[in-house]
Image 1 (tube, one colour):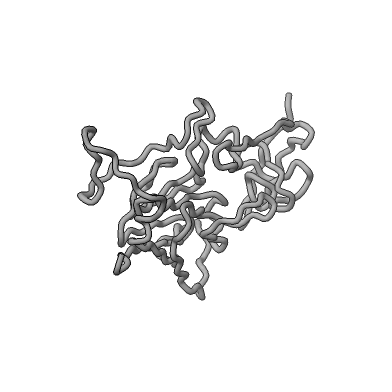
Image 2: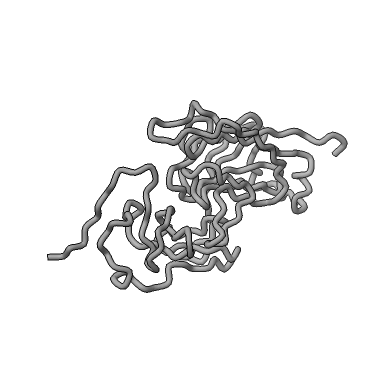
Length: 248
């Protein structure tokens, strides 16, 4: 009979066993060397499974469109650009329905309007404010920092990754939320479109993302508007604001 068992211990922080023998504070990739930790996210240090018993195979693909790493068990789409690894189609991320008079589809009989790349975006500026909201804290969550100063960012890049920095995995988010460990390293993206619209996409985060207190579906683009609020992690709140530039 196999002795493979999973033992759970009460502690303030779970520790996970790296295949190379390191004690990792991350459940998916070793926080020391970056090696992927096999098994479920609940597999703790005291599991009796030995490193040589774990599968030895390549766990990543490279997206041919944007060169982002893609885990084999994370779905058929690239979490950054939406490339379909099954069909080879490009940018197949579905877009949530928009209820807005400002965005209308062209009639088939009309001549398509040509918009120069990111020219329209210069007439609309997007900014986000990152703050800690203690009211978002769950009973099992740690206490939030009491000296956190809100951060303001102006979004200028087409793609802005929200997540936490990982030197071992070479993850350096444009919007780095390292102070909240309930946020995934690659948690979500804010995509600035050529027409000036801003989209939110959860890219398969562990704990999910809420927009105005409603959980968003992973890998679906949701349009944002002035005044929207994104909540994620233990107690992180991101406020979205837009303004039109005069004279354009």
